[in-house]
Length: 362
Image (tube, rainbow, N blue to C red; front, top):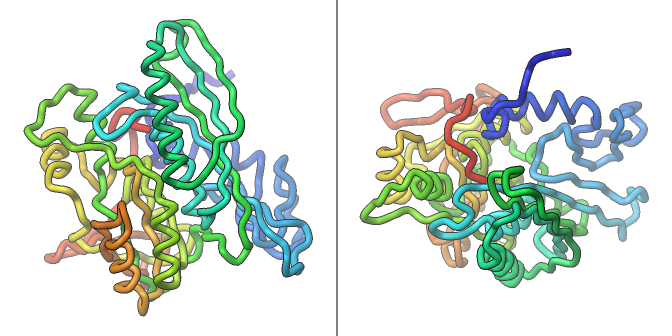
């Protein structure tokens, strides 16, 4: 019997997280992106993937399950994503764990190309002794996210456990939507020449939560950006050709862009001018964290055809939540799978964060 145990680093959205997920789940439930139907990939316990599918091994923001009737012009695909959230404190500047959970699932679906007809389910695991007012705050926030995103919450479950059995309220949300298979956005969609666009300043959520947890009293305290991004993706797609998308949560922008580069087998060059809010930058310096490596919960990173990049940015800036949108990089033929940060006076690789960079923040 192995004495190996799961550590906090395995939940930090870093290489350790990816290794654990691959080992425990990816290897067993198989798949990855779907190839040609009948290509002989048994796909492990998850079964063979049909053409156009995205499975667990792809480690994308969600799964895509096309109808079996591929080739039928009326066929659709189901996009599904699930996530659990537990943070301390459960209510923080700019949001709470309920807003975090509902927006997180909406954003995962948006990053897969599903923005309309979204239905959520929710499971609450509540430690005994939790104030009812706290739970009401959390569920009210979930309702507000649903109203903003135009989605519904149709089913759920509630469990109460002993006061010492958990260190906080756990909110699990699952989202489902049906889309035209041509509208899905797997992370592997980048091509050389594409531009990368972020919908706003990065690092706000992680820095805000960490500052609140540590009790720092900044003159201008950073606030979480937790918010649904489905409207931003709709606006971007109306303005130009979007080739890939992801939301930079655990591991922040650094992890998200590396995942896009690896999935697309393309190189990425990021500009130093990636937007970071002044209060977030200042607080991050005090806390000793890099805003590029801590979570956002209300941003998207999208790949855009180069000819459409400025038009997409202009449209995003006219859309609520996208006022800080900017082009932050480009996709290149060189160093496939790696991300290079151009500092203006030199270049360095921007690696996937390793270890437990910050305590759990989502």
